Image 1 (cartoon, rainbow, N blue to C red):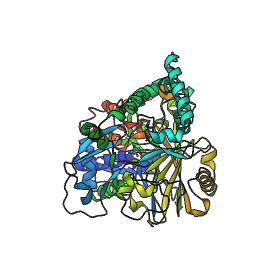
Image 2 (image 1 turned 90 degrees about the vertical axis):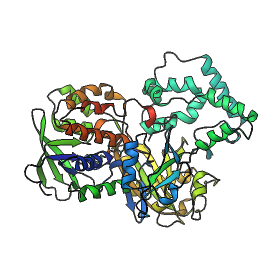
Image 3 (image 1 turned 45 degrees about the horizontal axis):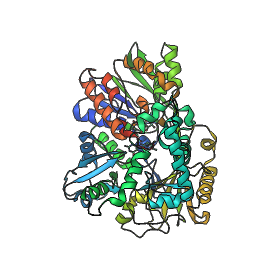
Length: 544
Ligand SMILES: Cc1cc2nc3c(=O)[nH]c(=O)nc-3n(C[C@H](O)[C@H](O)[C@H](O)COP(=O)(O)OP(=O)(O)OC[C@H]3O[C@@H](n4cnc5c(N)ncnc54)[C@H](O)[C@@H]3O)c2cc1C
């Protein structure tokens, strides 16, 4: 670890995820302040890293690159331009993410390294329930009716009618919210188990407000009206054709997974004279009054502790950790921060020879696949597993995100995703035990034959989801405490306890650098980023 020139100001940045690395590169581009990034993990990217395993690559959660912000779109393309073959769409491209779309004209960067690019990918994700695939979002079409059966469809219809008549009032819980809109049967079929798997809390204990904020616009009435009107629509109805075309969701995706973006950014930070230290955990902070004066960092390899003086401290540490390190005098602030809720996440990477429930069909991902497709591989990027008899929440099919994530195109590289709590039964399983458990689950629902599994690994992601219940209701008090520090900038997903996507974390980083350069002006406005735009989650309560 070197020390900057005498007189050059230092910004210590805790965390080399999207927020920390964006802040570092922006500081280098816009100022003479020296960014020194400390990252506890052995690689950069934070939750958006790509994990390499025996030639295959895992994306934890599946990261689509989409932003409403032109600044972010340009920023990404400056690091990894869009691949030449994907740039060519006449009239530009339309990309989408979680119920938002935008037109987008890729920047023409001329000839570029064919590996250092973003691809334009098409999204397909379906629901797997009753050992069958359903469209996502659910459509009232013949396939759904066939899968559900006439009797069950009638029951759902009846239950929906009952819910319309016996409206639950007051609408207190998320369960009330779902039942009022979808009826009890549809709620129990498609919403309850998945939501509870994700958050680990019964829907009765999550507030209705949570649903109102995030599950906008989806209504059974609209779906019914659409389904009933379809026989009367002309096949030449151009407005309809336009809608159908625009429903194909596309997104940008680095050829080698999201971590490729952040590895490239880290390289530029180093080339620009900044420092990025991996395996270095921030363990304590020193402060004088309301100024952070130094950071204590532990080398995770040697255990050696060091002290680094700083002029600025940009933190992407979980708010709970940051607050504890600042040792607030106000016991309530310390208590609220310590009890902020999180949800954790585990992925089992499985390499298989073939799958048994793929139901391969012509889908967007299938159409764009150039290589021969392994046996039974579904065309989806990911599948929501709604089966109540297993714990798996989602299944990623990495081949369909980017063929470059898979070493041997004749194999299928899967991510079996589990939502859990740090220290709970799943989290505490041995790696080998967890891989076996995941294999059994996938075989149980008929997706694979155990004998086709070639290899497996596990990745644990602590604090993957900052949650909005429990003590979060009193978060403002913690925020007011943090805001009082003159040279402290908490940014990012866990850094602000916000359900951020990468772009929100980057915008917060950009704002923090702007505020530092403006002598602190605009610091508190950073909290407005991603405060009330519902776009970071989907209509159906999908989590990013
Ligand atoms: C399942 C899932 C799917 C997602 N899908 C998408 C998507 O499709 N598109 C999208 O844009 N976003 C998506 N996201 C969100 C995206 O992963 C995050 O928004 C992004 O990674 C946040 O960046 P960050 O820098 O704020 O935080 P993080 O990525 O959490 O980075 C924080 C860093 O700080 C480090 N750190 C923590 N404590 C210490 C310490 N004491 N000392 C030093 N370092 C420390 C961590 O190791 C980490 O590297 C998804 C998230 C999840 C969980």
